[in-house]
Length: 447
Image (cartoon, rainbow, N blue to C red):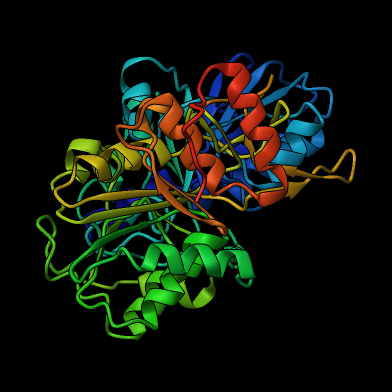
C-alpha cells in the first residue's frame, strides 16, 4: 500500500499548512465545493502575521473566515471569478474584487498568465489507487494545481466521488500536503418556484425544442422552469452538455427523457463542469457512470459545443438595449454575478447544426432605490451596465411578452422586434427613443 504510506507522510494539520503562506503570496481556493474550510480558518488566524495575501475563489457557498477576520483588507484581499450571494454582499462592502472572464478561458489564464504560490482545494477522500476526486466542481482546478508552487488537498469526507471524463482528479504523487478534519455537508442551492413569467417564457422556449436536443441550462428560475416543463412534455431522447449540473436535469432523468443517446460527443453520458442544487442532485451525481465531469476548457469551448447537433442554450440576463447588447452580470455598476459561460454557450449553440441560443428575462423589474417599475429593455445600456453578450452575438430574446430572434437583423429590425417583447406600458417611450437614435422606420408596425 504505497499510496497509504505516502498519504501518511504528507498529512499535516491545517495550522501547519497555513504556515506555508507568506506575505504577498497569491493563494488559490479553486471554486464552489473546492473552497477549503479548515485551511481558510487556520489562515485567518494568522491575520496579525501576514500582509497583502491575495486569495482567488468563486461562487462561495459559505462565508470565508479570511474575509470576515479582516474587514480592512490589510492581511487578505479576496478575488472572485463569479459572485454568489455571499460574494455580492462582500463586494458591496468593498471586500471582494471581481475578475472578468469567459469561463472557457479560465484554465488558460492560469497556465499562461497567473501566479499561484499556494493552492489549497477541497476534494473527496482518496481512493485505493491514490486519486482524489474533485467531486462537485471540476472547473479549472487542474490548471490551478498544475501552476501552483505548493499543492494542498483538504480532504472533505462529505464530498462525493464523481465519475469523470478528463482532469477530474489528482493523484497523491502530485500533492505536496494533505489536511484532514471534520466538515459539514456541502450546502444546497435552493431553487425558487417558477413564477408566472418564468412559466410563460418556458412555454415559448419549449415550443422550439425538438427530440434529440442537447441542453445547457444556466443559473436562474427560467432555465429551471424550462427543464421542468420539458419533463412534462412529449419531447424525447434529450442530451446534456452543460457548465452547471442543476436539478432540472434530475427531473428530466426521472421522467426518462434524459437519455444522451443521440449526442454526437460523449454519447450515453451527460457531461458537466460544476454541480449545484439539492442534496438529491448531489446523490445522483455520486459515482454515476451516466454522468461525467470535465474541465471548462472542454465543456464551455464553443468549437466543442458546436459539435453537438441541436444544441440548445438557455440562460438568464438582467437588461438589454435596442442595439441587442445584453447585460447579465451588473446592475447600476453593482457586480451581481459574472460572465461565466453565457457567451461561450451563446456562440457555441449558434455554431451547432440546428442549434438555438435563448436569453431570458422578465420585461420589467422593480428599481430598489426608487421602488418604481422599470423596463428591462432600454434604449441603450447605462453607465455601469457591463456588456456580457455583444450585439454581434444576439440571438433569441425571451420575455413573458413573447420571443424574438435578432440574428442577422439590422438595427431598425432589432428595435422593432425588441420593443414587441417589452412591456406594453413602456413601448411608446421606447419607440420615441428609437426614433431619436435613428433606428426606427416610419413603416415599422408592432404586432
